[in-house]
Image (tube, rainbow, N blue to C red; front, side, top):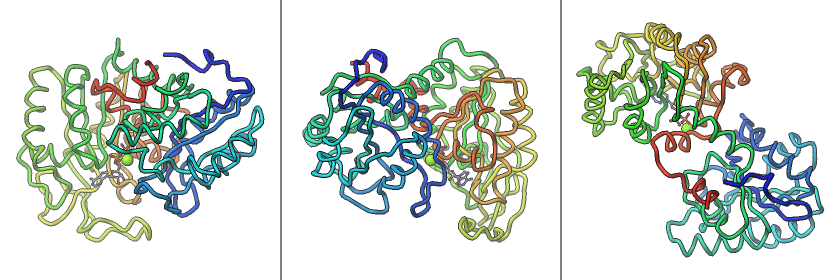
Length: 401
Ligand code: ADP
Ligand code: MG
């Protein structure tokens, strides 16, 4: 795979596919980690006299302009981080984009509007994606792929565009791939994996691959209830993926055979209903119960304190840790303790620690931890997991081609 050092960028228009999909509340960016993560690549290209055209998606608009998903606030923040103004194009391949790119001088940068405002970006139809990629290609001479959080997507700007321009990987993708290699080749042991979050079915697949690699797998978050159900517990109204119960049972059995230790919660913090995340009012019916005593009708929203202690113990001697998915609904203060405890356990261990996933990375920062104290905070959850599952990532394959 070529890197940006292999490209002669001076005076050239360089298209940088970034992942600037940051969490927003109205116009306010609540976590700018992904903007800061790609800034070094842009800065380096500018320093070398490139005309830089940055593009990204944000959220899931439906293939047409939708102001609530505008990248305009991101252009402002990117400019602050780079210390140079970022011209904002109010469309992707239209008059505004063409004019803004044409006006760029050497060492200047523009950000295009949300790529997903065009249906071609995410289309399953090769021709429709290709047509959009052709329009994007007309805006640039060279392509730099640095949107790590999107490389598992077969999207026009990620997969089809690099085939149309001389291309290279940006600094962020280089760094992310280097870290993932450390988790797959010659990993330092004990290797402990912590899984949580809410996208259960998305994440169950990674366990298959980890069975041959991890020494210990800790299960928290929404996924824990499928495993508890697999062990015969009733889980009340908690998040449960019924069709995955046999899969979880199979993993537990195969883990035993392969000498992989599954650590399943022993207690959980429950409430009578999903808590109000905006108002932060106390959750109704809050209590901590053993996993054998989850009341009917209540839902588990965090691991309990006994489990937090158990997880900390299981992390203490780790040499490598990969963590994806918050342990609970950390957005509400009553259900943040489990996530906080795991983050602290990572910092207390001597392990090389990797935190992957949009919400996991945001959780660590929002809970006030110093991100620099972790080995690596990945900008990509789905991308990291698919890499660890051994899948081919379209955006990486395209850069290698
Ligand atoms: P990531 O983005 O790090 O990959 P996910 O998107 O899978 O993580 O999950 C993050 C979300 O999971 C958080 O918004 C959190 O509130 C939610 N979550 C964690 N535990 C539970 C639970 N027990 N029940 C419901 N949602 C949960
Ligand atoms: Mg998420």
